[in-house]
Image (cartoon, rainbow, N blue to C red; front, top):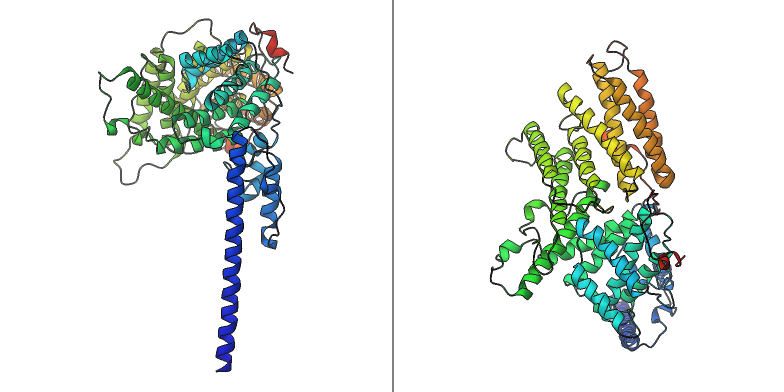
Length: 557
């Protein structure tokens, strides 16, 4: 009986202690929440405060590591932004989480030095020359009107609503990065400063910018654009993930299931419809591009999309070139998915050969129906469409798990596609039209490796062909890879691996030299063969004809 009473007393004491601890923790948590709420209220009125998270509190031994991580985030001044991406210590391969470099190295300038109005408009024009083609996140007319209005009042662009204060420096930051891609003499210091200023707007008033609406999605996509130009694909991947999930939450992919817009809808409703379509398909373009490069599945399958392409007329419209780019990204991902993933279970028997021939015809038709181009544009040149066609044909006709041994006729076609692809990359490199070496180097490597594969295989089969012409293209590919690696050092691994592949051609001279009849297809997925690129380094580009730029841009270094 005594034992029972003693046990009950101990249990009661333990319960009392636990309850007291819970009340204490709950009370402390309530105080912290209240203080944080008051801090936000003070900051909204321009009063600087010291965060309660800087105050040291007793911690259990098991939470020491977490506290250190949290303290590191707080001292970086970007606590909330760091919550958007996992800490390197919390993921399996922490060393690969290069996106934290994007956040930890930010230094917010004391005063934002905006350019003069003409320079701001010039940078905006540069941004939209690129984005209206590749990813029309913002409406150019509306943005230019915003710039005009911000520069009309004192003290200038530092005023305006929070979305304007975030989007203007983001556009300026991206535009300067874009100019750096066409002229390495353009410093990126101004770009870094504008990006830091935009992120500061976010961290200062996050609840006022990230509302889970369409503008929230546009702001996320601007960060994705910036990280792509900064060659930080790790950060781009994480932010595009946030963007696609928000697009799903906003139901942007189900327009026809909600009912098509009426022809007599008001201009305001028409503008909103165009905006929703344009922003959704911009999300689609950016995610598809990253998924193909990084060999990762896309979050929104084409079968789930019931939203038409954006309108090319009316308020908030897209452009014919942007819509043509969407069609290409759809075909590109279909090829990537079909060649690399398993066929649908319990689906009808899939004729891969018929699909491949049909896809080739679709790509050729796409290339033949390119909308009119501005012949003076270096940011949307004809070279892009030519290069996209032949690069994709190389991918389509290269050996793959479903097509391990293409017939001789297809090998001959593949050799011609790869030769033309190498020629186009050489021309684009020489004219300074290449902006994303993290993508063009693997593409060029693939085309060159396809040439090597065709030469070796055709020799083994005893085929009669002009090997000298193909070998010249192999040499050309090697030369361009060397030049690209000089301007983008992480690409050296592709260059060195290609040198090994090119040297292996001499090992195959005839079908009787004892070489195996099956040749390695390692070139098919370059990221599986070669160490991954250092995706946090910034690529620099060289051009023979630098654009005429405002001197203000060069004074920001």
